[in-house]
Structure formats: structure tokens, C-alpha cells
Length: 434
Image (cartoon, rainbow, N blue to C red; front, side, top):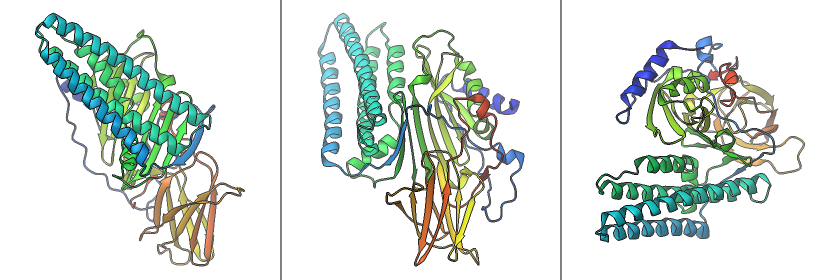
């Protein structure tokens, strides 16, 4: 349902950001209670359920992986960074040595064209990596290594673009801001927090994190739980257009965002700090109590979200009613979620309800494969992870006691289908402990 007040706030923030970046202050933190004491959710609480961008499931491959310290991969990423940085510095020095402004202008344009070609090549590298994972030629961990490389090179190419714009600004009557802005926006779509985390893990700067990976020939979903936060990034090239017909304006961006993310737009503050008219991409950002969203919108076809990055604190994650199982004095409670979504697992004493610290594993029903050990529940008896893409079994062990539950992922509110996004499930609720 459309919310006039929220839209008015969004439009005012958008107008204020035309001349620069609008700094949005998040609303006051919302209170929430635990599952054990929370009453049935009201309609308003249900409307707080978030929407997510999903890939088409045809010809997709989903798995879990984690990037860890890898000397050869780390050296390759470092070499990319050093080589690109050296190239940028050398080019800038060459420009500075040119005394003829006309020659410098031509050199800048040549360098910009070469940069645009390199951006296209980098996108092709990413697409090849996604296809290789989809076809089963590489593992999820290997894909994360390749995406870490793409992320790193995209950062270096952005620095190159900034240098070219700076050089052009020093030439009278010459500007390449439009082309540079388009390049930088495109490079942003190849970067993300999970790719950055993978790159840090490769060089030993961060510990490995179990990461959900789903790919198609046209897109990728990455999600993880990291330091009390659920992080999700998605890219779907099938939702992009090659032409510029029917392009939305920056003033229509709030309408697109509200159709795709109605609950988030109601809860938070919207701003659009990035909008290059020459580009076919707009970027909308929303900050709200407990999370933030960055959505990349293709301006064609009345605007479609093709990339998103979401961060949600676990104490603000909305989950379904728990499915419970009891055995050997243990009660296991699991709150179902969508594939790759945040999965809450709780283990308690069946008689008293007191939290229990036990070992948690996850596996496939009727599978001969050894279940994957996830870790131990914390002092509150809780462990968070990301859900698989198909039916799964959660197992808990404490001493000689064992209990398990079989579940299937729920269907999320899909940003790709606005009608779906506008119809939240009726059993969503907030949990308070992480």
C-alpha cells in the first residue's frame, strides 16, 4: 500500500540531494522482544518484513563456500592492485608532461576509451566466472576468489577514472564528467561487502565466513552472517536494458523504490546521492533502524532493480514462526527463511526452556554425506547461519542427546515481482537476540 508521508519524505530528501549528497539520519531504534514472549504480530509489524532481489531459478547452482588465506590468490589480487596503481600514476605523469592542451585532451579521451573497454572486459571476466560456477566447473570458494579479484580491479579502475576526470578539469573548456560518472557507476556494480570480505580473507586480514553462493549465467547472490549482521548482495544482468528508451527520471526513482521495497521505504530515510543523467543507472539508498539498503535501478522499462546490497542487524531480522522438535530432553527451534536468508537456530532445555549450548550441524535429508558442522549455540542458546536453497536438516547434539528438524526454505518477497513485494507473509516477526 502506498504511504504518502513516506513518499513525501523521500521526495524532500531527493530534492535536497540534487546539489550534493543527502545525509539521512536514521530513525530512532525500534524496540523488539524475544520469540519466547512476543505476542502474535500485528499488521504493522508484518509490514516491516523486507523484500529481496532474487534470481530466476532456471539453470541455477547454489552452494556454500568460504575464502581463506591463499598465498597464490592473494598475490594475484595484490599484483592487480599494484599494476593498476602504477599504470594510473604513470599515465598521470605523462599527462602532466604534455604542454599542448589539445594533445593532452586527445590523450585523455584515448585513455578514457581504453578504460571503458577495460570495464567491459572486467564484466566479461565476471560473467565467465558466474557461468563456470553455474555449470559446476568451479566451486563456490573458487568463485569467491574470482569475484574478489573483480572487486579489487574495479576499485583500481575507479581510481583511474577519477584521475582522468581530475586531469580533464585542468583543461579549459573540457569536461568528461558524464562518461566518467557512467564508468564509475558501472564499476560500483562489480564491488560489494562480501567480495571485499573475500579479498580480505585471501590476504589473511579476516577470518573465513561461511557464504551462500547462488549463480545463473546472468547473475549471482552472495549472503553471509558476519559480526551480528546479515549481509546480502545480488547482481542480475537479465534485469538490465541495452537501450535507453522509456528511461525514468531521477524524480521517479522514489516511486520505483517504493514499489520494490515498500516496507523498507516506510521504515527508513531515502536518499539518492548518486545519479548521473548520462548513465542508465540510478542508485537509491535507504537507512533504517537496524539496517540499510542500496539498490541499483536500471532506468529502462519504467525502472527495474538489478542489484542490491542489504545489511540487517540480527536483532532486527524478521523471521517466520519457529518449527520446533523435541528429543532426549532437548528442544530445537528453527525459524525458517528463504534460500540464502538469515536462519535462526535455538537450542533449549525441553523441560525448563533454559538455553543450551550444543553443537549444530546442517545437512540434506536422506543424504549419505556428512552434515556440515556450523558451530555451537551461544550463551543464549542461539546460532545464526544462512539457509540452503533446498530441503535441509538441522541437527543439535549436547553430550549424548540428539535432536533434529527437517525444513524447506520459504518463498521471499521478491523485488523482481512488485506484486509479490507488496504482499508480505502473514507470519513474520522480529527476534531480539543475536
